[in-house]
Image (tube, rainbow, N blue to C red):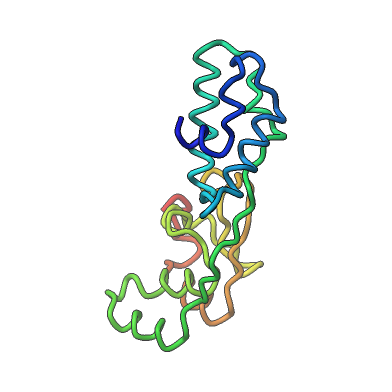
Length: 170
């Protein structure tokens, strides 16, 4: 409550059923502009969550804090540069041979490890030269393809048995 009381003391004098969407948005704006240091986005998110839980507990319906107009402040994420080729080569030299191909696919296409780990032989699209990421394992629940360069795709096919002997669920 101290986090809510400091930037907006007037909001604490209201009854819970009198809190509006504008009050909730104003609280978030006040926390984002607090002096001497503004609160970080995740701290504001936690505060908003607690306030919405309090209003839920007391049966305030509709809950103004859960309104889609009550938005968190934007936060710029730090840019993380991709690794240099020499760093990838050093890692490839250090890992076990069975992990080299998946590591190079991750470096080239950037899938999540779980997306690549759950891929099956039936997900290899030879005409497109890609690996299909199924919607059940993809973060946004849609199909997408990991387009591979020719040499990496040829190395992937070399690890598979002949087409007529392939188990598509392997």
